[in-house]
Length: 248
Image 1 (tube, rainbow, N blue to C red):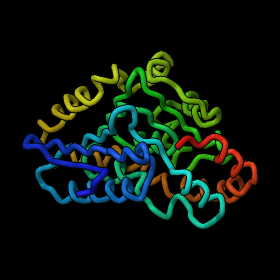
Image 2 (image 1 turned 135 degrees about the horizontal axis):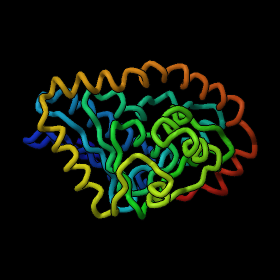
Image 3 (image 1 turned 60 degrees about the vertical axis):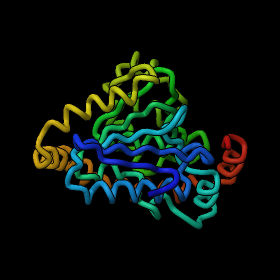
């Protein structure tokens, strides 16, 4: 098992995946990426699993790319599609609940949006921060963020790159559950219990049906985002913004 991603499958069929890379604050470190892939691979092989709850630790759900990754994309030595881990919740055959108890920023917000259901915290911050650094969103964010938040609010998130508290998103009408931070994981687990009561085959079939459109639509979206990165990521201003704004 990964040192920074822990997972287990309870007797009731709830698989819990906990991201806890304290050194990187749950950015997409190599350890976190590998751990997520291992966790979802292991859960896929466990016939007892019926539903997945994904959460972070303390104040962090997931905070997206590391500074080193952003610089590498800027320099043209990598692309976000080189490690296709960010849509693991979508590709999982089981329903996934993102218990976003802490901040979810950039690719971390996108990761949560690929889940089938989301529970947010009133006190935590959520933002599609890509444009803050001067480059267009990736990882399917241009599609999945408006899909989950609604087109107008989703576009606002993408264009402004602002961070929004969960309570403010609730006031704006976000359809996800928004509760106090201390209650997020418990609420997600209670929701998972409702699902785990159902037959596994029925859950798998319904997930396949509900996710089919997004899975079908995503490949051309990813190609379009990569093409936009070819235009926007190489700007000298982007490197300046990464150095100025990235917080370790």
